[in-house]
Length: 135
Image (cartoon, rainbow, N blue to C red; front, top):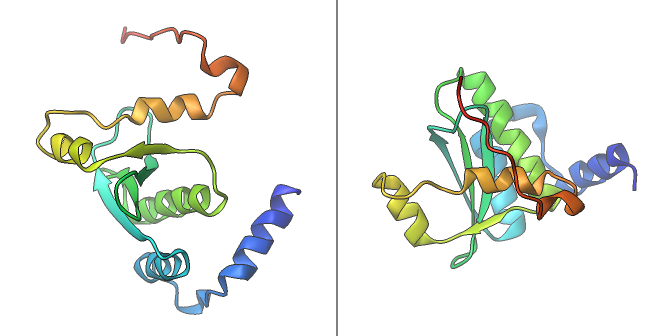
């Protein structure tokens, strides 16, 4: 199906009244439809990354991480972008409570770099990636 038509179908099926839109209300609406909690939180993202959506492998919960150092309008844009990945059922990473707890204690970095691999064509995912070092 053409992406534009698919997007229109998804929006129509949401039956959300955008006249009084807030990002918080929109997220609650999607949670109710999907029967899954969505935790959206500002985060110190790696350089060049603005947001990420990940799925909890233990609970019916999704996580949206968005850059914490951009203006609030940009943060809403990032959250909507990540919600679009969720609504279009794009592939994403599965994380668990241990990973999140460790990350909150700065002991473990969430696997944001693994999300980059999901954007690559399938035939390139298994190839070793060349690491770029800062100049």
